Image (cartoon, rainbow, N blue to C red; front, side, top):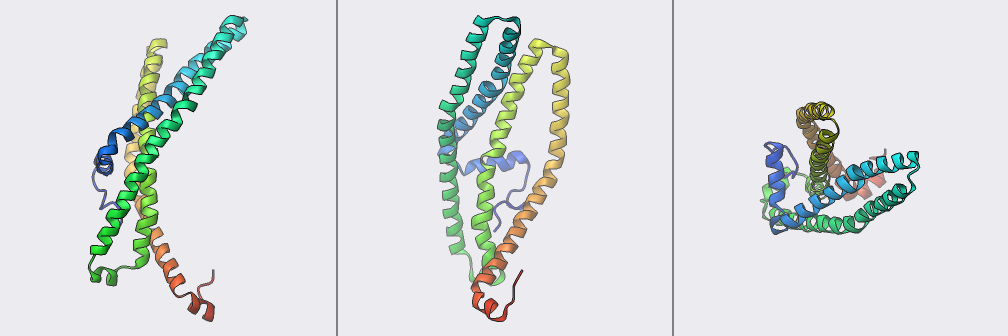
Length: 230
C-alpha cells in the first residue's frame, strides 16, 4: 500500500522518474517547461551572468570608470527584475501541475481502497492507510519539485559554467569537470542507501499514525485509566 516504498518504486532512478512523470499525463510539457524555465532563470540571471556582471562592476569601480559602473548597475538591476517577473509564472505552472497530479493520485488511491477486500482491513491497520494518504503523498509532492528542479538547475549550471570556464581557462575547466564527475559518482553510490532510509522513515510514520489512530479511537478509555501518557 505504501506509495514510495522500495517495492512500489523499484528500479533505477531514471525508471522511478519516468514512473512519476507518467502521472502527469498531458500536463507533462507545461510541468517540464516551467521547471526548465525556472532553472534557466536561476542559473543565468541570478548566478552565471550576475557573477560576470558583478566582476565587471567591481573592476570598473576600482579603475574609476563611472560610465561602465552606471551601465553595469542598470544591467544588474534588469537581471534582478527578470526573475521577479518570470519566476511567479513558472512557479504557478509547476505547482498547478503538481497539485492537479497529486489530486488525481489521491482519487486513484481512494478508489483502490474501496476495492480492497475485507481481509485486507482485517490484516492491516487503518493508521497505515491514513499514513499513505498523508505522509506518502506529501513526500511524493516534494519529490515532484525539489529533485527535478535541482537536477535541471545543476545540468544548466554545469553546462553554462563549463562554457565560461573553457573561455577563461581550459585547465581549470577540465579540473572542475573531473571533480564534478567524481562528486556525482559518490552521490550516486550513496543514493540507494538514502532511499532505503527514506523508505524506513515512511514506514515509521505509518506506525506512528497507527498508534495515533488507536489513541484517538480509545480516547475515553485512555483518560479513564490514565494510560498512554508521555
